[in-house]
Length: 462
View 1 (cartoon, helix red, strand yellow):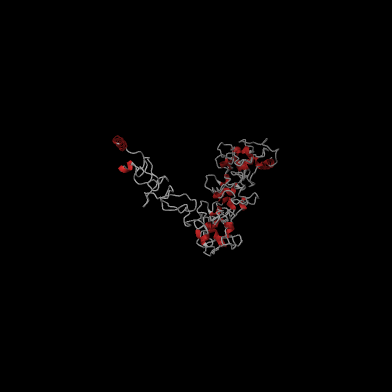
View 2 (cartoon, rainbow, N blue to C red; view 1 turned 120 degrees about the vertical axis):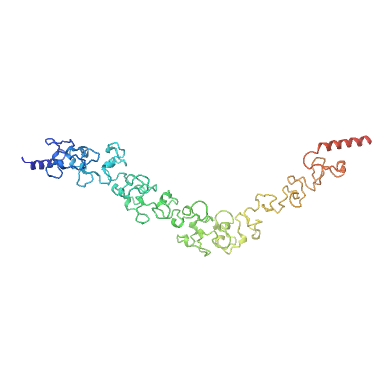
């Protein structure tokens, strides 16, 4: 029999299925591929066929493609014939294919733990080893595509092994496949040409997706793909500041200007867009205007009853809330926002320009301010009707005791109760002698002894 028929017989056996095996034909390297079948170029000389260029012809090389996996182990279906195992369908059987799954990552590099065993490297736990898996991380994007993207988020994990390719905390398949068709590559929320799984600002609202966790307005649309995060009718991209300075950016603040009127309620014409509502025509829409009606009184201070509901405040009863009514008399509102109206408007706030001055406010004596609006002297702390002698022309020598003042009755105690500089009542012996004792504390011991001696002397001469 000539050589050619032997070749044809061998090739036929090679694709004969499970019954095929190198039984009668030599297999020099014991890799499951007969020597005659390792003559890839068909020139009847297997010595010049060296797929991996390692200096060993295939028929003597137990790893023909040098991918780290022995040729005999590339018989995936276990039928004893490596010729019919072609995972990626590229016409090259795995045993001579250095990228078995055609994912752009050489099979040699898919041994992630470097233990020399490719079968135990399965990043996405789908029971398909990475070297045979065309989607290594199971995120719905083929590894071949993700290899070209590199490492989008710079987290040192290449995209083909990263389930959050853009680092926005959203899972590439579970979260960024918006239409849930199993293919994140056709989801581009903001239409900027960058698919969400690679876009650091999925909705193009000026806020990084990473900084938009959750669903602030509870509308079922995650903030990262919601163009109006707080659902107030104003696009997030137009609410990047913090108008009222409360620490919450406007795009997650339902009362942007902090005037007790929610932004959504400042849409007076009901067209769903508060940006075109400007009651006082000052070019500042109401939702950003601290004085909506331009009457000189801050909107927040037109909450007459202090319940943070400005719709029920209408002092002149014309059907228009005070905060939208420039005709509302300024003296009928609480200009300083302390909850009390000016007397000219029927209120009892003695200074409607100072929020620390109102009926019942804590009083700080001697500062010249009648904080509690009682109308009494700010220099009479004990309320006895006399100002402290430490302030101006006051005559109260002890403004902490209402029983000590110029009108008080003097007694024999060592206290100057009437603030005349003496401790005895007028007409007594001590007062006649002119003994002026300290107004606080006991009299000096020497003076008391002298007084006692004089009293004894008068009795002996009597």
